[in-house]
Length: 329
Ligand SMILES: Nc1nc2c(ncn2[C@@H]2O[C@H](COP(=O)(O)OP(=O)(O)OP(=O)(O)O)[C@@H](O)[C@H]2O)c(=O)[nH]1
Ligand SMILES: [Mg+2]
Image (cartoon, helix red, strand yellow):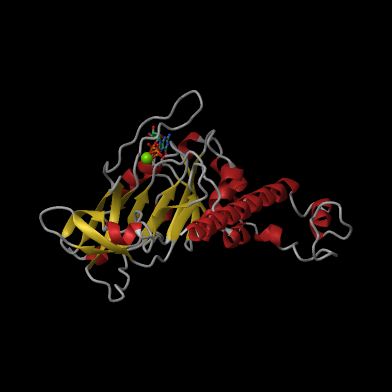
């Protein structure tokens, strides 16, 4: 098998072993592709548990010691060109890499109760931070009386981001995705359970590669059908990472991602009379002036402020936790 069919393989940088790409993770066992085809592997514990290597995630390229009759061994994680991280759910201030080495982050929301522009802002900040380009897909367009209205409301919180209305059921809007679905390019699908991520993978693949199941009628929520991340190669050669719907998307540190997402808001920062303006009651505040003039939506300003606080807080806690660990050594 030619590994280039699974994307652009990075340099091995003199590492031992052969390159491979992770297509799925099942607890401690990884499924991957390499020049010999599909294989299963486990981490070489010495390197990984000594803390010198980043734990691989789906989409990662790794250096592999191939073993023909049994599990191969993952020796190292090769440098990533993009990765999507969120704050790991739970009390420990750690980041969790959801997927790696993709060209586009597709953020999916469906045209029903799931649609939520504030949640979209949160996803966008982390998506821009990933190093790849976000694209918004508003799914289940067949259910909406007026899909253009959803597109308009999403565009208000996503300046400069490409938006598409699609339906896996009718095929509407799928042609518009062909610019992204190029051979060797990788896309990751992210969004709540039930928005139709796997249905869209199936529609694009032209066959049922992922299991799909109905949403709960009462509140429109999904049933967490997809339980592990999976990299799928479409017949045309594009690669999609399908992910399980996320229950919560905790902010990782995303300073650049927030700047990109909220460039319309941040343009007012640094224009106040006082350099240390807190944008509360100070005279000459450019933010308050923009709100008063109707140029800046006060609700968007508040959401920006909250996300930034969350991002900075997580960064602080994470660094402190690291310092403590280092001191304890
Ligand atoms: N009407 C309509 N229903 C859709 C569409 N796409 C998906 N659905 C339905 O939405 C439900 C959930 O679809 P899935 O593809 O399993 O959703 P998912 O995002 O993969 O969910 P998780 O795997 O739980 O994260 C299923 O009943 C699908 O048939 C669409 O375009 N139109
Ligand atoms: Mg799914």
